Image 1: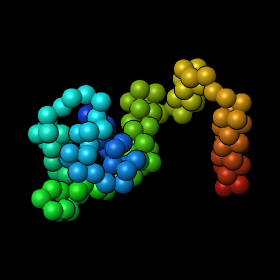
Image 2: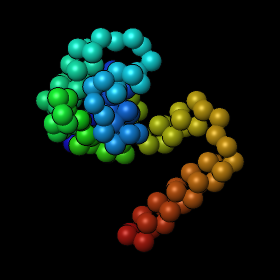
Image 3: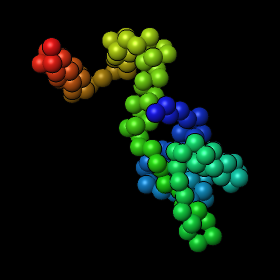
Image 4: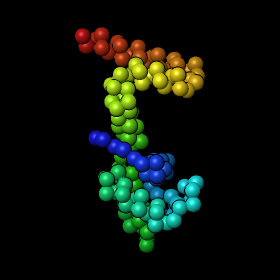
Length: 126
C-alpha cells in the first residue's frame, strides 16, 4: 500500500498515533500553529477520504481513529525514498542515514546485529 502524507496530514496522523484518537478540537489544541478549526477539520476529512482515518460520533463531535499504523506508514515512506531517491539501493540509503545523523554506539550495534541477521537469513535460504 502506498501511503503518503502532506506535512499537515502527518501532523494530524502523529497526534492520532500518539493519542490513539482525537477530535478536531483536541488536535487543533496540539498543533503548534494557530490554525482555524475548519482547516484542521478539512485535513481530517481528506485523511478519511484516503482511508487513513475513520470516525465515530461522540456527542456533537466526531472522534477520529487512525486506520493506518505508524510503522506501516513508515515502511511505505522508506520504500518510496528507497525507490525514488536511492534507486533501490539499501546500502546507499543506510550510508546516507548514518552520515546524516550521529548514531550512538548502541544504535550502531543494533544496526550491525540487524544486518548480520539479514545476511544469516539469506545464507540459510540459499
